[in-house]
Length: 180
Image 1 (cartoon, one colour):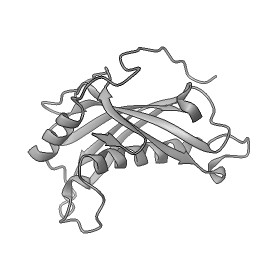
Image 2 (cartoon, one colour):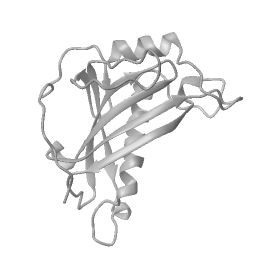
Image 3 (cartoon, rainbow, N blue to C red):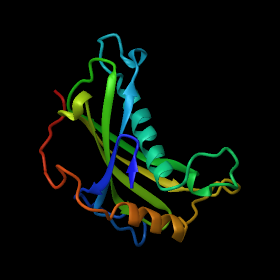
Image 4 (cartoon, rainbow, N blue to C red):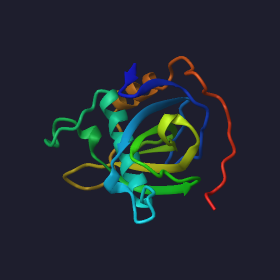
């Protein structure tokens, strides 16, 4: 299975559970997003708030790849309905021009109602890491606005997509320090 911008393959991170029964999955999802010139701040670097927008776009592409494209009708694809319960970012370098961001996501915890992904953002060319983050989405019922379990179909698709053969370069561990 491939996504716009990259293959699904094996990564390596697993993390702590976010709800009862949560487990990490071995694979990773890679995609790209485009930085526009108007996302740069007065210093000429990608504004910090825009990283979360690009992370959201990457997560949306993961759902598209799993067979859950966006549909405004809440009854059509309820697996698309989630809220972000946690978002943490560490910046390790600047993005100082428009261009392509390379985003790799790893499922670090798949719980009954939550899904936590760790992600790494690389600047144009897939070079150095410019940001790392963690994002926890909680699946909700649109009518009650309360958490609801992910469907078994969704869980199965996610597991199948992230259990593929290793992708080139996966398995490497790199220390990164905050951008100071």
